[in-house]
Image (tube, rainbow over the protein chains, first blue to last red):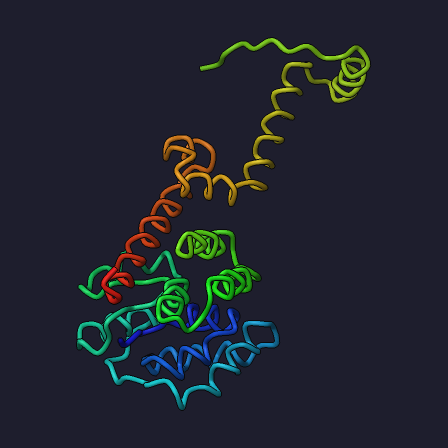
Length: 155
Length: 96
């Protein structure tokens, strides 16, 4: 399975503590724009910045796909999907969903990757729930809702 | 449209309310309406995650959620639908 993940979802998955496991065991693809977004966020001094810098150190396990330049990472992921270079798009950006739905590629939340790991028996149910709680921190209430709703995946 | 409701308050609380409304030069009714509206807004902000969760668990209808949190209810519905749809996609990979 190939997962194309946007910047926000990558950062959230790093907060969960499982991004390194995901990148080591599954095929993750991003685009140059997403790498640039991580580099840009990484220049700041908050938690997201530190997390972005950690993700940039994992790039040896992440494939960067060449696509035509688009204004946002999400739009470049649509190009990845249109080129049939991923099975799923992963994004927690609710505003981007109408655009992402333009492709026939299923769109998942970052929480679904935890569920995928759970189904693959890579993590326990308890570890998944703890990870969701970590993802919930430092986010807006709607993003938090994605992680709260994610609890249902493990029921 | 407005609806009249009757509430009973203890004497001491009523005296305090009247002191405040006298000082502010507003009617008791106007002041109480304003304070109730403020309290409801604050509680909705405070409990919106809980309200959304009640909806995703089927304990609250979409209309009830919408009347509490307005347009944000659409996003809550989208998140809930996408979570369920995504779960089915992952389950398909594992043959359910």
